Image (cartoon, rainbow, N blue to C red; front, side, top):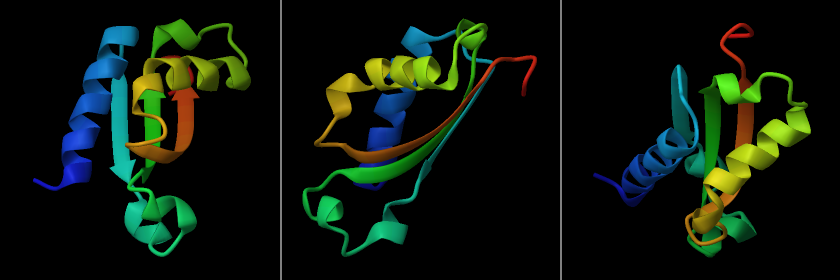
Length: 92
C-alpha cells in the first residue's frame, strides 16, 4: 500500500466521524502534479466527492469549510491541495 493510500484511509476515518456519509470517493491526483513545488513538501493532491445531509442549507463555501475542518490535522503535511465536490443526498 502506498503512502497516499494510507493517507486516504485516514482521511476517510476523519470524514466518517464528522459526517453521516451516504457517498464518499477520495482520489489521489498527486501524479498529475509531479514536479509542483507543493509536491516537494510531501503533501499530496486529492479530490473528494462527499455526499452528506449536513450540507443541506449550506453554501458551497460553508460546505468546503466543513470538509477542511474535518481534515484540518492533515494540512499541510499530508494534503497540499484538495478539490472538493460536496453535495446533499438530494443533489447527488
